[in-house]
Length: 141
Image (cartoon, rainbow, N blue to C red; front, top):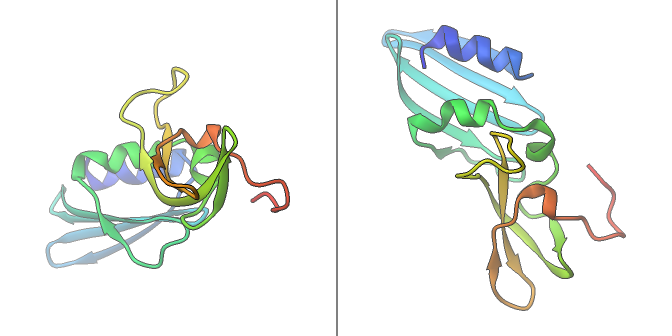
């Protein structure tokens, strides 16, 4: 994805776009809700990409092929939870430890988001974000 395509797609999907330039090419940061995606370009080709997810302070590298998928990610699903949030899935409580792209479409839609949940009584789950609920005592985002 070239810089112009990234900017256009990000703006259509509700991201705020910040563009900087250095000697090797543009660096684009897109920000939406508590998410931040950074892409460095060498000329018009993406060279490196990182993402900062809600609940984290540090960025993590992502494969270049995921840039467009994250930008198109379902905003409602992406903004429901942050890393560290307590959730309940089918009666099991736990903590969100990561937020990832679903490798398949969910309910026929691209951009589905999965949560990684470490359950209180052992085990790990990876439900779609729509399958998780906040405990009743907590406020909604």
